[in-house]
Image 1 (cartoon, rainbow, N blue to C red):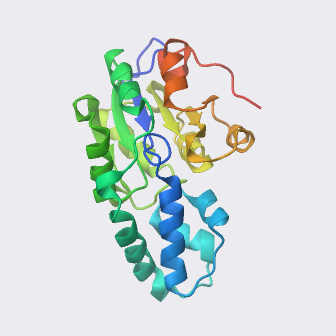
Image 2 (cartoon, rainbow, N blue to C red):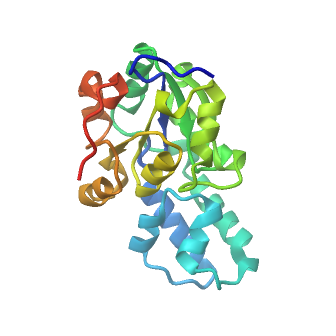
Length: 233
């Protein structure tokens, strides 16, 4: 593969939860319910800060390595069942679909790179209604390790034959920024997932926007246009 010789990106990789759909707090609530039903008292604020990790990592992060691993699948299944009840009414963030279409109109290929399960990704794509501009999607089901490991980012790049330097990742959590950095891809941070600007900026994205509308307005001077500002912090 020969990387592009100009400095314009060829691909925009997007996280989903908290980036294009307003679902981080739904995940926090349904993980809390699943944990509570199985005898675990974990503060919801702590759960929220772990959202963005895949199901293969979040339980270790919340319950520790010494937990009873025999419960893991039951907890994941409980969370999935509780969250699936929202599949028909997932809230799309303002201008999210417009943002995807505007990026595609500028010649970039869009790939979704989410730690969600395959059926969650399918439900989110249905809610977005922008499949005509989406070139591909990865999910936690496609890789051995989810975010903050870089596997999903590598898989998203492979889907379209792009090199890391030819892509920009857009996400809303420190786990997104870390996964992108470990894959060698610059990351734009959005504040729509509930992470504070200070914390998200400290993780090292090239820039931070309040949400899809602000990024859409600034698109032609953003890293997606190949004019990346210096890293913040």
